[in-house]
Image (cartoon, rainbow, N blue to C red; front, side):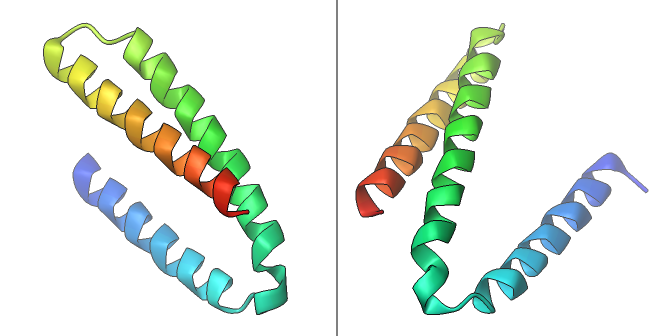
Length: 82
């Protein structure tokens, strides 16, 4: 199997598992769940900044910048909501 196919398979499996798990959480517990996901978004943001710092080509820098902007918006928006 190619690496891309394996990565796509893992992504789809994680998406389906995440949907099944989240759909079974009672509504009253969504706020603590969102708080935990905001923590994970912060870790993703730090990872994007590290990748951007190690970027060599213009494409890597552009993708890293987009990742940092989207990650920052996701983390900040999540904290505002909760």
